[in-house]
Image (cartoon, rainbow over all chains, first blue to last red; front, side):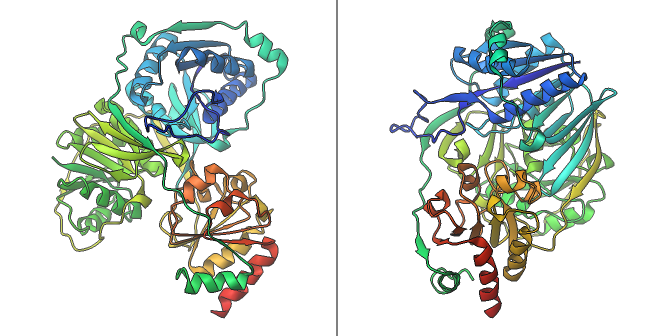
Length: 249
Length: 312
């Protein structure tokens, strides 16, 4: 069984982002970039399936600027067998990404696609569902548990009221939530080995996909800042203030 | 110009978030219809018909829609959407699961998690865990939106008398099957809709200690929440997680206990009206946005709080 893992290069989750003064976006120059954390969970899950003997090959694919090669190397250092880079000047919108991924799926014929439920930059939470729709495949989003047996993926999903379990006939798309696994760190020998693993590159034109944005970004602003309030000395003081000053008790 | 809102329900009752989605839809300034897809959900449609200001309630009552599987519901929504300019749902786990599938089948971009409607094609949404707000303009003829329920008021649940009209969808694909669900049972108000929320972090130290929060919650009529650290440590179930990737809440009063205030968590609660933080570390980032901060050992402060509230 082959697993395809789409990954995205994003601003590292530890970076405190700054909105550009001209409101055209978020400052990306000289900012640490990393693999989207939900995608790390996706790579880890795919690699575990290979280690268990359920999967035979793990292919990582990314869409973005040339520097996204680094993100593919990270995935390969953790255990992905090879990488595919579709080069674009900027990250396309989720719908365009889903169309490109559909083309990759058609070329690679994986049995399963595992990907992050959302990227922590645009927070869209769309691409996996869109890919499943375009392929006509079932989807298991926000997965906290994934079992593969007899051509079926059993997916436990984190939903608002608790957990839901669905059975998907493969091929299928699964998107990861935080508690699916804890990704490993790549070892130095594996990082070295990953440098020799193959990366195929292409462009959206190679796949005949139009990545023209449907949304125009008019401006990016800072959210209204909350000011720190006061420190209270005791629980009694706190309850008093909540009753009289804030009027919420 | 017309708006189709997708109702969220459990086949017995309408979920509160639907009322917020209807209010957001009404802000678009066009007639609003509601689609109720489920199985044996006639009572939901009847309740929905009483929502103030709705045009028509469309009822798709079929076994295929019982568990709101997106594989079955998305083709139905696409078929119904032919008569509408907007398709809108709450950005709940149900809406997030369904709507991108609808958008892709319609070949349009989705605008996720809208917090403000500027005009018929311009919307504001948070990016980078709410650390920036993006204003985007959609060029798609048909627009698919998910809205953040806490950013819009609730439409009045009564006062309307919309007609209920049955609709049929295309046959569902059979590659997805519902197996089971485990829902947390609680007498407390729903986290997303509660007027008061009391949340615990890793500082609570154990699942047992979360009961201290629960006792206070019951006294306040509050919902209980948790930080990601507390959920990861197994002190609280996943559906209590407040934060960027969990629930977004905006109650009148939010009490954070033993929560340091990771960006991820703040993204989920910073729009609360009044924020209280109780933490031993006076440098904790949560104090940077709390209206009232108490630097104290929570194991002393919580019993005291319970006692003070009992006096009232």
